[in-house]
Image (cartoon, rainbow, N blue to C red; front, top):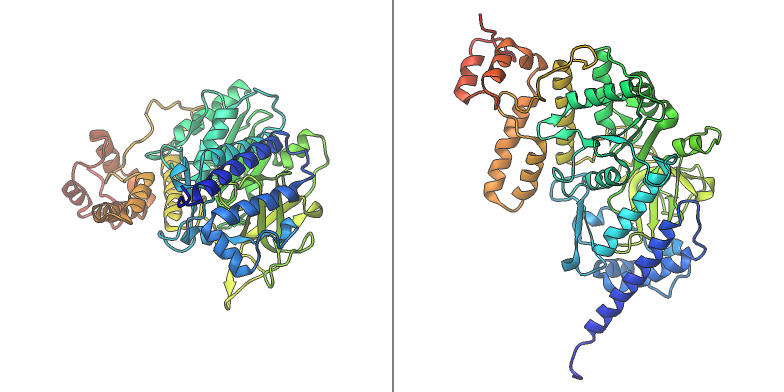
Length: 510
């Protein structure tokens, strides 16, 4: 027995400490966003000691920084892990075989450099509890316990995107705050425009408020299409909209104020009921702006900010030396989140922002960019995609936009002319659904056959999305859809239809 290694004892002690921390932090979360944690520093140092002991990658990082447990006495001095580390290493502070939840970040460079965040059962409880509390406090602050409303979601479901944190989180919101008729409106064939239009008109007619949740860009494209069709809605008082994912100051030519103006114009939802959420896959707790919560509490309007809950801390760090900056000065946003028990406590991101209210709030101004090898104090003006900047999510953004453009062109206002036609489930050429393409891309990294399927799917997707919209409105195309719901019967038929037609269009039948 004397030759038995001591590792099992350490593992057992670490598991017990992880569980103790989890239970205590869950109590802090359940106490709400207006509570306090007087011993935040003690819990942060305990978590640092645990992570240093059980997480080899983090320990190596701390050793390089020459910072070890016992060397520091303040949470601010715990080493911050760059979010890029999650793209190259498995940063887990528990045995990976106990993982029950995995999320992939959007990535910024290539498909093989996407962050991977794993959580065990305790970590899953923490992230779900934290975001239920944050969502209830900032998106539904006027709801009593048990109150629900219809939620319309312009984002993928977990079934379509099982590794997308946004999909998982929104589904939890649907479960906790949504009525049974709540639904995801991004399906295998794209955005279900007719379902969305019908639900909005139903809310108008019934006077029952709805909540819309989804990617900012999906709403921007939808509002722009509504403007072109001169279509407006007057949703009942109490309706609200929550957007998030990839919106860093601008989306194309639309800035944040333009977005709020479109929400008011198209949906009739005032700015007070527009809520933006900032989620970072590398940290457990989402941060919401406080516009609706302040309105419900009768507080005067002010410039939007994101209150930081008691179990978190946020600082803007100098781009020169990573020292903390005073309120209002722009730097790289760093997060210390006690709900990060399964990973690491402190993460510094590539988001530029500033703190407010003596560090109790924060706001983001954009993603950092590199100029001459250094971080620029000015944000990147490149338009963000709805859920990340990798090829996968840029393609998803493009697919959503294409789907909205196409289906809004064919959609009819259900208030004027109710449509009996089902949502179009296929188009000429059988465009592969974007989530399937995403799956094929991920799998193809390790499988040659899947790589071939990926290339074929991407080729078809590119071919379809680059066709002018008029191509889909031709009489010949409508006939093809009517004759064969799955699209054209063969590529040969497609070639025959295209033969002699003007470039980019199908020659109509005489």
